Amino acid sequence: MTALWRSGGRSGLTEVLGREWDLIVIGGGITGAGILLEASRRGLKALLVEQRDFAWGTSSRSSKLVHGGLRYLKEGQFALTRESVHERQHLLQQAAGLVEPQSFAFGEFEGRKPGKRMFLLGLAIYDRMAGQKARHYFGRDEFEALAPNVSTKGLKGGMVYTDAKTDDARLVMRVLQEAQQHGGVAVNYMAVESLLRADGGVRGVCGTRLRDGLNGAQHEVRARLVISATGAWADGLRLQGDAAARGAKPRLRPLRGSHLVLPAWRLPLAQAISLMHPQDGRPVFAFPWEGVTLVGTTDVDHKGDLSHEAAITRAEVDYLMAALHDQFPQLDLQERDVIASYAGVRPVIDSGKADPSKEGRDHALWLEDGLLTVTGGKLTTFRVIALDALKLAATLLPDWRDKLEPQPVFGNGPKPRLVYQRHLPAGQALRLQGRYGAWAQHVIEAAQPGELSLIAGTETIWAQLRWAARCESVQKLEDLLLRRSRIGIQLRGGGVEILDRIRAICQPELGWSDQRWNVEQAAYLALWNTHYSLPA
Image (cartoon, rainbow, N blue to C red):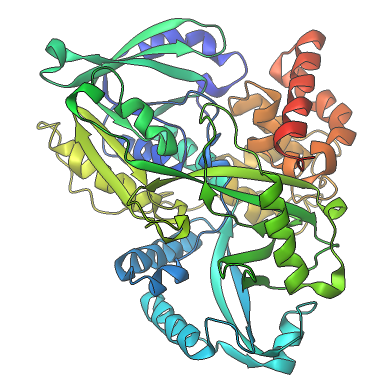
């Protein structure tokens, strides 16, 4: 792991940022991480900077699905669906243990849309794109066995199909880790104050002026090309300076997607359950994830200040609870059953449609005044997006040549096998390899007695917290509990009951004083209560 990510490693930042760079990538979500990886492995000297933490924005608050976009077929977006299906299959093969198959069940109810015929037609197309074939329709009795607790009122049967799921924030970290093995550099809490323009802007952008979000230090970094991969925040960078005077206008429509998290025992699911919301017919789902059950998602215009964290609203809580009451009436689910909530803002290209859910999910690239902006798209297709960005970047780097053919995200080499460890819970070997790749054995070796056991209520082992504190650029406690691990949305109160043990493990690794830890803990709990619990 790069020295820059180790505790105390930022002391070498000035030297690192002073190097000559081919490429600066702004934005530490999955799109920026993908561009950093594809650029670094192809010989470009690439630097990624993120104003908050890696995956802080959309890429830690998604629906956690690596899906082919079945609903896009209904809208005629065949190319996007085909592309997504191919990338989903690729990630299932390349990132086993991090990207995993997830079966979905969709009940057929009397008088509800979509009907069986249209749904099965869509699934047939879906199968053909994936190069597979499976049985999809099950009668009422079989479907009830596959999806217990589902409402039986008007139930005729149901469809079952397979997509995939992941830990989105850990996927970002794995891609960044891979990029660093190819020489890429990634720095969190480094904000872009302004773009540096060559010759008064005639030759475009030649670097950035940065401000360290932790100590306020200023840096000027030069590069041959700057790429903005800031997602829903892209308009803010595009419209810097005199862009508005030249007629530039906002192009994005930030949409908020909010989710509820329930204990697996309270909403036990053998399959993911997909349904059409009884109020507006939008797709909503509930599925097992990392020891809990996720319920989502909403799709509403986000009017809030993008510099502040998004949070679920009272109306969204009511909307998702209505879906649960309709689909699982016998469970009598209540708000007191909810462990946590989270909300993310999607970067959707604005086409002016009245219904936010009707907006397309394609990605877009714009080259304006020397700044290359990449935004939109889906978690699933991050590799495709990165290659498209580099194809356009190649026109601005005339001495750089690469065929830009797709390569396995995590390399072609043999996967290192973990040394057998009898204290490691079942399934953890594959899980750790998926999340840490070549570093998985080091995670295990870092464990102290008792740290290979699971944190109750999650699928995370204690040693992952120690490794994150030691080697994954944790700058704030929220980084550790909301993104390096997902304890903050898996345990009640954000994990408040186990904070003493977390402190014992992680404070020495981070090198924080007692005062620093106390400040961080208070800030984390305040953030959790305002943005990850339920609104009053």
